[in-house]
Image 1: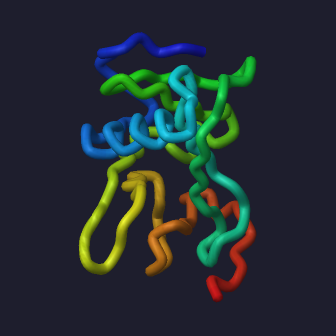
Image 2: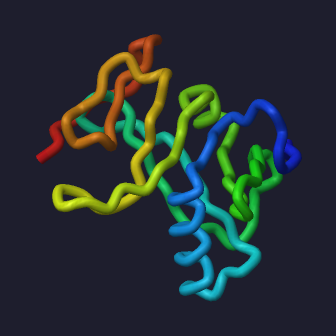
Length: 128
């Protein structure tokens, strides 16, 4: 599935700051046609944890979103937990890195990379 650039509703949105950082990472890794893969995996201290990776290409069933010159890939299983999420890039004295605001999270851990979904699925594990 592919979403046209500038579409009014996107599964996942990325801020300009995060897109700029993603483009820089893709260029540094010599992946000019690559993409930012965003996914959800079981575990984390609240049940699910976010993951991101640089990808050379999309998989057949990926949802492909393009915003601010960056392609974002989301697998169908992760999509149900990421609908309406926003990817940002934070760079301050306490934290530096990508951050996800997820309106589907009913509970999050203090680490900010783990969440619990409304359906209660996912198996939590200790942060430390």
